[in-house]
Image (cartoon, rainbow, N blue to C red; front, side, top):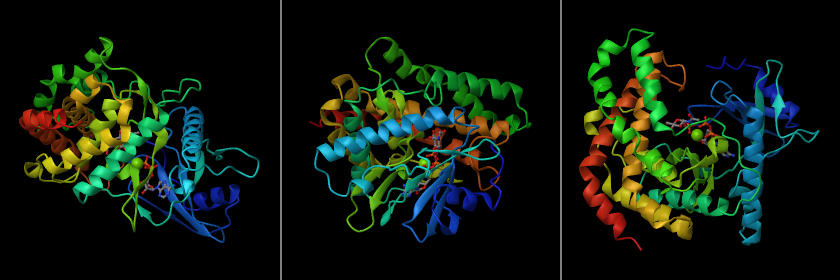
Length: 365
Ligand code: ADP
Ligand code: GN1
Ligand code: MG
C-alpha cells in the first residue's frame, strides 16, 4: 500500500507543473492511483500520483504512456479527427519539460489535460452505451496495431497470467495472514477447483493460436469517457497497463465489467446474471472498433476469455480480502469479498450462457 497523500501536497505539486491552482480535490472512482481535479486560472487539469506499490517502475510506465499517447495522437491527426485533445490523453509537462515530477518522498506525479463535458461511468446504462465504449477500446486496438517503436515495458509483469494469479491466490489461502479463510471456505474451494479454466488462454497463446499485441489490459467501462451531450465514446483512459498482451483480455474485461446485471461490489451476489443485450452490444462494438485487427481465432474465443478474466479477478479480489485489503482501494469492510463473490457468480453465469453467447458472436460479420 502507498502511504496516504498529505493534505497540502497535491496543491504544491500542481504548482510545480505551473498550474496556479485555486481548488484541488479528489476526483473519479479509480481503485489504484490518487487522482485530483485541479481548477484555477488556467483550464482544468487532472493530477495523479502513481501508485508505486502497484507500479514499481513508474518512470518506465511514464515512458509507455508518452509513447502510446503520442502514437494515438499522430493517428488521429493523420485521420483528420476533430477535437483531438478530447480523443486522446495529453500529458502536460513541467516548465522544464519533464512528463513527471518526483516528490520529496520519491513518489511520481503527472498531469493530463482534463477532458471536460464527458463522464466515465461506473455502471453501464444502456446497450448503446456499451456498444460505444466497446468500440472505443476496439478502436484503441486498431490505433496501436501499427505501433513500431521499441517494445513497451511490462508495467506489471505477468499481469494477466491467470495461472500465476491462481498460484498467488493459493499461497495467500495457505498463509491466511488475517485469519479470514475459514469464513470463505466455500468460495476458496470453488476457486481452487478452477485451475484448468485459469490456464485456458495461456495454453492457446503458448500454442501460437493467439498473437501478442499491444493491449490496454484494464478495459473496465469506467476507463472510457463518454461525451455528456452526444454520448459518443471519446477517449480511452488509464493507460498504465498498456503493454504487450492478448486483445482477448481487452474484450474480456469489458465483458466482466459491462455484461453483468449488478455492480462489481454489490453485496448480493445472488442477483448476478449475464446481461445478454449488454454482452451483445459489447461484442458488436468491440469488433466494429477493432475491425480487421482481429483474427478469426480471436473472435471465436471472446466468451471463454470473458470467463477467464472474471475468474482472474475473483482470485485477485478474494486474495486481497485474505491479505487484509492491501491492493485495491476500499471504502468499507468486506468490499473485496463482495467483489469476489460477484465475480464468482458471473463466471458461473457466463458458463451457463456460453452456447447462446458463442452462437451470437459466430453470427456477427
Ligand atoms: P485509476 O488507475 O486509479 O483507475 P484513472 O487513470 O482511471 O485512475 O483515473 C480515475 C478517474 O479519473 C477516471 O475514471 C476518470 O473519471 C477520471 N479521469 C482520469 N483522467 C481524466 C482526464 N484526462 N479527463 C477527465 N477525467 C479523467
Ligand atoms: C483496477 O485502475 P482501475 O480501478 O481501473 C485494476 C484492474 C482491475 C480493476 C477491478 C492496475 O482497475 O486490473 O480489473 O481494478 N488495475 C490494476 O475493478 O490492478
Ligand atoms: Mg481507472
